[in-house]
Each structure stands twice: as C-alpha cells, then as structure tokens.
Image 1 (cartoon, rainbow, N blue to C red):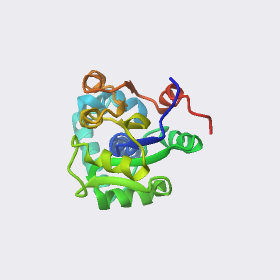
Image 2: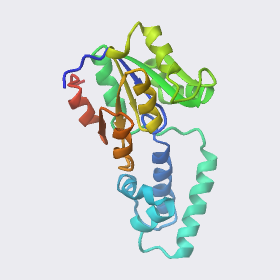
Image 3: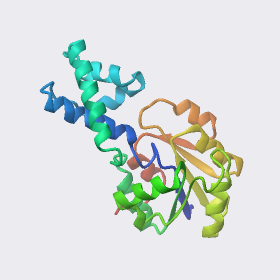
Image 4: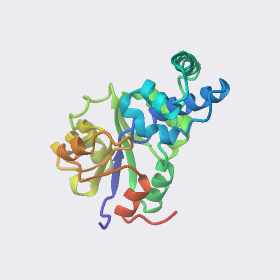
Length: 219
C-alpha cells in the first residue's frame, strides 16, 4: 500500500521494547556459563507461548530436571541484578530510522509508567526521536483513546493521517474507537487472529515486512 501517514504512534512493551527478549538472552547467557550448551534466543521464541520452562526443555532437551531447575534459578538471579536493561525488538531501530527518513512524526502511547518509560527511552537513545509520549498516570489507560487524541492534537493530525502500531488487543481497540488505522505486531505468533478481530488492518511478525507494506524509503 502507499504510505499517506504523517504520524505513527507506537506502543512500547512488546512493540519497541522486547522484555521477553531480555529473558531469553539471559537464558542463553546463563546456560553457556553453566556449561549446558548453546541457546539461540530467536529459536526459543517459537516456544515462548508454552512458558519459559517448556521453552528451555525444547531448546535444551538434553538437560535433566535438576539442571533445568538450576538454570531457572540462575536466570532469576541474573534478572534481579539487571532490572533496567532494555532489549529492543529486532529490526525496530531500522524501521524507526526509515520513518524518520520519510519525515513521519513519531510518538509513543503506552500503559507503562511515565518515569520508567523516560528512563528506558534515555537508556536506548530513542529519546532523540520520541519527544511526544503518553503513559500511565498521565491519561486513562488503554483502550481509552484519550492518549491518541492528545498526541494527534499536539501534532496537528487527524485519524486519517495517523497510524497506531501495537502488539495487544487493547492497542487495536483504542485505535478503532476513534477510526485510527492500526497495525498489529505478533512476534511470538500467539494472537494474530485476536489482533485482526480487534481491528488490525494487518498483522506482521517482522518490521522489514511492515516497512515494505508501507513503502518506506531505504535508510
């Protein structure tokens, strides 16, 4: 499709920030330290809907029950020591850069707390691109569309020139309430049908595919 959007509003968790990715990379690191073998975090994503224990069993099938427990404890301990680490969804940085190249305005609408969002944006360097955000505590939570309405007003855009990108049903419902087009991101292949039923224009599992769909210029 041709891209007529002037404003793209992102969700944060699961759309830009990959909280689960941090966990999977931690599993890979701890498994290597313990001498349990190599874990490909991207392969492990395929089993994420089964839960972390099952994901470990699938990716490291040779481990005994005792070793699995040892690995889980090591992962939990490691996560406590790095609670502020932010892992980005693969490909999202390049996608954001392509939106910038196309001179499209960017914003974030999230149910994450404002202060923690600001820390995460600064930690990743994304604060240079996302000057306008709405987060929990500032406006009613999704699916109330007030955060979208306020962002559109700030940029002087309306529903026809705005695109919402998110990974949850509430993102889609929020956009649908005010006739804003929404794209669903389903990186773990868990809820494509639910996202479409909630109003997603399309659902993708790769930002490169979305960039092609929107006909964005190469960086």
